[in-house]
View 1 (cartoon, rainbow, N blue to C red):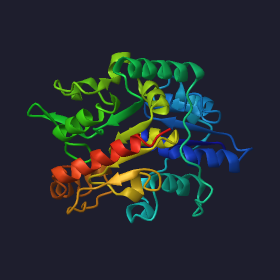
View 2 (view 1 turned 90 degrees about the horizontal axis):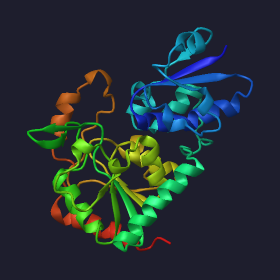
View 3 (view 1 turned 45 degrees about the vertical axis):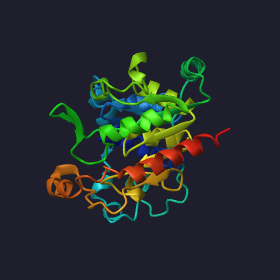
Length: 311
């Protein structure tokens, strides 16, 4: 029977599911399937396999079009034994659920596609800013993840996955001396004193614009959020500052430089659906994204050195 895969959660999870969905199509050429996701369907626009199979959950008539004559499968990596015991990363967990396999050696990296228009538009934006600022390189920084909230007039991530605001500003200020810096994030979280980065919001972007700019930029700096998955999809070098989540589950330690605070290991809590010990665990991870000044300086210096090695 035809299958419909429901991929719920954030945009990063959707990107992580792409390799398993591609594999399903490869292994089952005669078995048609659909994908339903919660608001991020633009991520698979231009994808030769997934674009015409993917629907948003709010699509009108989706029951008759998609669900009525298919078997529904809702893979959930967070509750998979191999995932929460750090034996599988997110993409491998989706592969186990979607393809019912323990062999993940044939998984590709996430594949995202941009159109020629999107590519040319992003190239022009970056080229114009490089000329204006007389810089050779461009860096996209995504300092904040989806857990960021404004509390007491200050952005704060209760899940401890985002960069500290002051430390982000120090990072952006130093990198702006060497490269054009783009801020990847919502306008309400952009600091009024951030004179060092260019907000991508100025170009009225959606995730397609973020993807396009990342695909044409020289370097990516981020946290555990969607931007790192986009950067990996386009083979961009980068540095990821990690807090409460684990490298092997949610990032790409074989591709990126992964930085953790010296002297504080995360208290692990991968099962975030349903609030499984989340509040107590988050308390113990308090301060894990607040790097000591010496380590922050070392990280900034290392990123600058890597930028200058780019061709």
